[in-house]
Image (cartoon, rainbow, N blue to C red):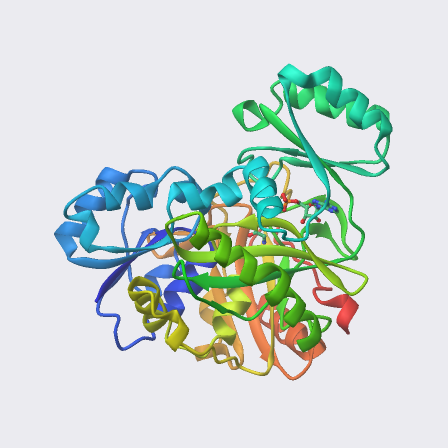
Amino acid sequence: MNILILGSGGREHALAWKLVQSSRCSRLFIAPGNAGTTRCGVNVDLNPLDFEGIKKFCIQEGIGMVVVGPEEPLVRGIVDFFAADPDGQKILVIGPSAGGARLEGSKAFSKKFMARHSIPTATYREFSAADLAEGISYLQQHSLPVVLKADGLAAGKGVVICQSTIEAVAEFELMLQGNKFGEAGSKVVVEEFLTGIELSVFVLTDGKHFVTLPEAKDYKRVGENDTGPNTGGMGAVSPVPFADAGFMKKVTDRIIIPTVRGIEAENIDYKGFIFIGVIKVGEDPFVIEYNCRMGDPETEVVMPRLTNDLVELFLAVGDQTLDKQTIGQEERIACTIVAVSGGYPGAYEKGVTITGLDRLPAGTGDSLVFHAGTRAENDEVLTNGGRVLCVTSFAETVYEAVDKSRDVLEKIYYDGIYYRRDIGYEFL
Ligand code: AMP
Ligand code: GLY
């Protein structure tokens, strides 16, 4: 089968690396891909939001499966677009319909969904500009800290945790009246702050059944010891030591099963990943958020640990036979470290030459280098984004895995290179 992956980050490189290992994968294309994905398949110069162009390409190349990496094409309805087209219908698109992608695309929708299906989450209220005054008085009585969430997609920046009522009211007004997040902030969810430790839980569903993939923990802050501003993710580890069998059973019973049943009961067309941001409060799991895709950089540890043939799993999603599949996991620990551009997550330069990639030994032992923001030009690899490279390593302990990834990163150089050396620090 010929397969097309949409997206260009480390997540997509890890998906490409995994898919191309399947004997069922004939030709692999990545649109638009990066300098790393060319090692797994052919990059195609297409925008993942150009649905018409993607469909044309699929027909021309005989693509049987499209795997959607990022959320935006899903929220904008790529699955519905293919389903509405006589040629498109023949292609299996991995991802939810726009209705299902609202679990990520609308915080208000996802909170109501959780309420309907009794899924544990922070208590909340939803407000729009019409009930600004009511919202302000609600905030004035709310405990601190309080969490404000812009309803729509806001490039990962729509959540603000406020330590004081004054800050909360100002932020609330900025979102609803000042258009801080544009249309995404036309509704705001105000919710209780939960104190605990977070992990990322990954489910693949065919709309009726599901399998749970290895869980992971990501490190969002730019600085060591989790300091400084939030980023797209600076590293990840899998498995997560505190996610033991007892805790994961609670996650399955209280969160995953009701979520998949809810999707089925509400007739939501959902054939893809559900990424559940979970927080462990005391001994109990609560949902922080849903995403309708895999996480990045979590995919860079989850895919290497998954021992199943991913094409087979996706075909089972298409046939709604996921109940016949069993997930296999590499027992060793995987850790990924993300190397970013100098200045990230603030302003940074692109087009900086990366050297040392060719100095890595073949296969680099227990390590894998996934490209994120890179592009190839002539014979050079250049930086092309904030997150540049992800180095994943396997070991028996977090300490060794991190150490191996750092060793690989020490051989790579570009002006401004920065990475956290303490990924997994709380598990050492
Ligand atoms: P999100 O953009 O939904 O991923 O939220 C960003 C981050 O805000 C999450 O990863 C959490 O660390 C934090 N967060 C969101 N909601 C809450 C909450 N109710 N309580 C505590 N932290 C939260
Ligand atoms: N690593 C978090 C995300 O992909 O949203």
